[in-house]
Image (cartoon, rainbow, N blue to C red):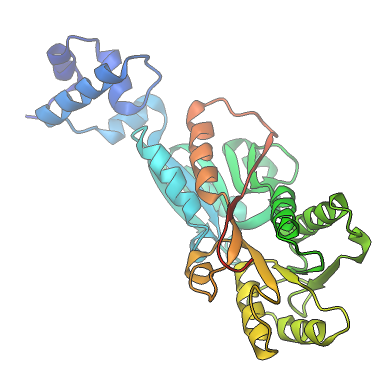
Length: 334
């Protein structure tokens, strides 16, 4: 025979409301010890939540839905889901994601997510960008992760691109590098903000920001892994010219990998001749390069954890944009 909340309440000597709060992530206030004791009794009695009945009572299932804007295709951006899932499980919630791609529009995916009656919905993007939500769905999304809502109607968690670029550029300058070239990501918001931080750091160090060289990593107007690369030609020209750089800052770790290969082709040593630094900390690239790459780690997992807190608090601050700091990962390339 299946046990009930009443059975657990009798055994624990508490009210049914307290049991429900302990097991279902409700707002009932209780000590950690009481919550844990109730969970142990429920497990001992073999209690199984009737999700259908609970959904009818509360109007939602113990789920957080995620509209994944190409997120699942990124090997390192999945840290967002890991952070979100870990924090959600601590509140006895589960996370599910539905992918938004070129063949499915935002409205249709949001409608599909809502069919599962989740407690809350997040929108997560593979890379930092601005997203326009349909007017009728703006209130349905509780938080934007790694992106910003175009009309600032939804709380947004984004990486502090400007701050990260200032920090890594300052790190290169503190290491004695003065002639720094930035091979950046054209057409992307992250690239635009990182260039601003790079130029600011150069100016603050007394180096002429107007002369700081910023070059596009690809031939097309918008960066992508498939666009024709300009890295080899840039590095060949820079190192063969009258004013070769003593450091190259790269728009991401993939660009850095190309810079390594190009520097080797022209006979330059890293870091003795040229220091190399980057953004993203895509570990399968950065840690395996020779020498291992100094880079700025994106705050993906932290964004996921904070998003869960916002969604489960039930009281987000509409339109607030929170910038999360990167973490400098020092390796041997500087």
